[in-house]
Length: 180
Image (cartoon, rainbow, N blue to C red; front, side):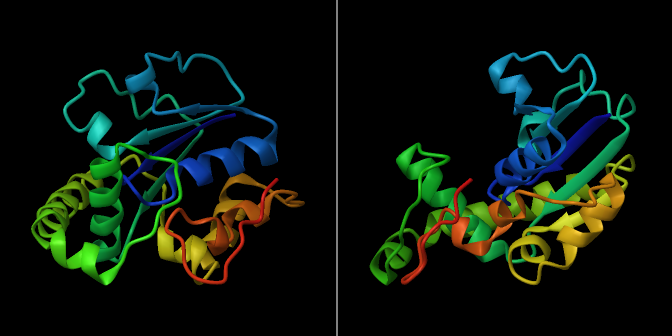
């Protein structure tokens, strides 16, 4: 099976990609355009980030068995995460933000909120997305985890703990990551 994830930046796409690849025993391909990676073959889970494909004419949305779209409802939190990642040039490292940092970076956060709104408009126009889920539905309410399992056909998950909110990149007090 060939699975495509189209994700808004800073929406938990890496973690979703990794989880599905591990559950299914498939090859994980993360942001193939940036890495110039091949997406040929079967038994793969590929994640494109929206801004990676927005202006690409080479993306084929039809050569997939399953297509999942991932966005985020809380645009402000997404913008904070994007601002921090850009500022630190770190995309997979855990981070903290203080009230002082939020105040000092308010203009950048506002800029990224507008950018995210535009990305979501682009996302909503991709008709090939068969299942739309959200960061909040996976990591907070968990309701989208079951929808994904049903859609893909996962009946006996072994790595669902990877989708626990303690694994989010933004550190909160008193949480420890649940690793593989």
